[in-house]
Length: 449
Image (tube, rainbow, N blue to C red; front, side, top):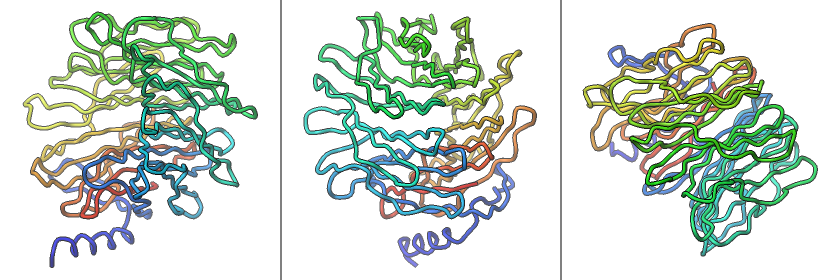
């Protein structure tokens, strides 16, 4: 049997098989069979490009996945809806983009089951920020250009939506001289209010902006900025009561190494936690409502290079940060986590998987208001040229320990599953998406669990 036929038969088998399966006894991972199958929900790129799928869920457990796909008419933004009662629908293109390239897709839900998607589109000259709104009951609307400054590329948009269904989109953009941080606000019932630069500093190259919003509508934007030859982490705070952005705050003062890849999350009381990696370690700083930012502190100090943190907070202020880290021997990467408890701070870093046959990476974490956290990551079986990699998950609650790791898909020879993303509803229903490389290219897969 040739490799293509074998892969095809195995894929068909996957569609009728359970979502999660037990791990091997000697791999350090385990799991239980699940009734929900992993399914292919759309096409991605060919082998040379990365579709980077994203997912969001509403209060009822319905989900929307979004990604980029080269459909022959350009690299377009596609979406697929998951109904909690009936499963996945059909993928659909949500922009009219011929012979152009769209990247950096992001999506978020409001409290009424509506959603907003954003992305960066190349028009032949510059990259600009676009958005499309999903209305519950009627579907996707027409895409809108939400910034018109063509002096330089606008990239890496991020979207957050508050409890009043107002949205903020933030991104970094070159203004012809240097990189700056911009934002546009969508007011429920009124629409977009116009793009504007939100930094007060006039020097430094800014980029990689991320955002979080609390129930009162306050927003924190954390970003990297090059200052005096060093990459630092700064934060901006939008005071919803006053309707203005406050001046930037420096979140770390370590100038011995670059600070990279910030992430931020918040609780229901308006406390925010920012994380990043620096000097091969994961670091954090907490914003306390009414008091402001504290001091940067270590979250994990195990030996080995630690990179790419992700963070989520529940309503009560508990947080989980995950990252992947080179082992002390330098032979493999593992996934780690640490938990923040209000009143006592960070705990001890914990190893989430011990399968050292191959690298584990690309961890992502989500939380719901009830305090459930779910983590997903990609696990390679070996470091061979054509390794098999699969998607795994673990859950934890603030009052309990970590559940056993669970595989979210069937293992298929020569197939690689990577870049998982996860979202979790308040009822505990979780949805994960990722891309899988097979003989046909890189396609989008999903699992509800």
